[in-house]
Length: 248
Image (cartoon, rainbow, N blue to C red; front, top):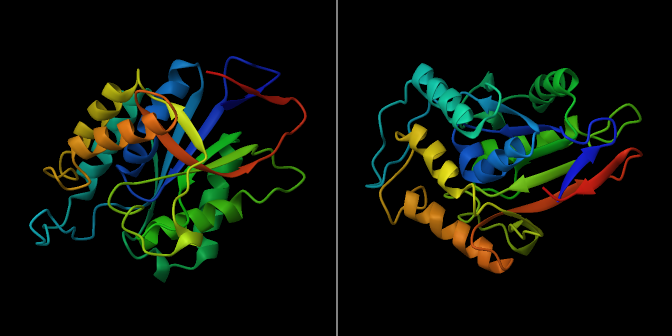
């Protein structure tokens, strides 16, 4: 179920706010593709650089620093694969958002919202292990606070393999999806999008592997009686005048 405006029922503005390049593909790549196929305009914003911090590889050894221009190029190619608009990069330090004043992140996100004016927002689950994911979630909720002149009708939290399922925050912080999007027809496009991020993907059985992504889509699908799905937590839905739910 997606939200639609009465003034133009064929096009909805959607914004995905992710901490790092590839989070958007893992979390909601199939849903992005589905929005685009339904005529919606999808924008993607990355809060952190995604290219300056060393990453642990499948052998528990630190990889060399990922080249930032290359990861931004990969993110642009990934967005094109899904049919989304070219992404925006806020450039905050990778895996160090806890050292940045939250107000600075909020103000940067707010500027994007004022420019794009989305009705639907996708972002990270609040309980992820990765600190950048949690800070991004907090910044988005602050920037999306329901003020009289704001019409963000829906905010959904997505899961990211190797962060969401690794969190040990107890029942109150665990990902408990209550929204499922059928991506049976978009799963191949999601996998193709992830191939743009070869430097971030890992061999099976690492959770950031093609096989794990497909397995999760199958599990989320069967949970909802579907072949493949992406799962979300409904953070907020507001029934504003002139906006109604539609099936896409």
